[in-house]
Image (tube, rainbow, N blue to C red):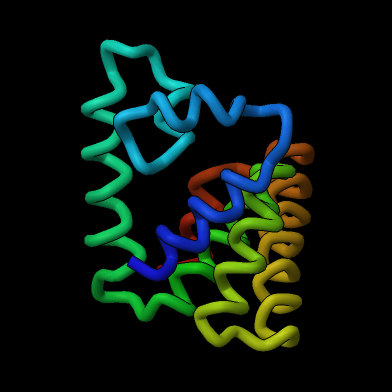
Length: 131
């Protein structure tokens, strides 16, 4: 729940995305839900609550889950998620070295993906490397 509180704090601080009035009118605690069509907001709220409960506070320790989310955010090049998950990882106890390592993992995956895809490396040969 601490992570959700931090996420909500981050999003309430973002200026220009949601007016104060719109946030007060919202019947949900997560302003990202307002980005969904009204007909989907209840389902989106249930989804985000389930992710918070079962993923970020599930079988993987929160710090590791946030580092994985940071790595995925870097891979997606998401300007919103990178600072959010960096701060959430820190709040969960991640060190600067762990954060740099999560970013380096994303960079390594991107490099190898580009090399394999760009050179049209044969899939069967690639999969055979892991048998």
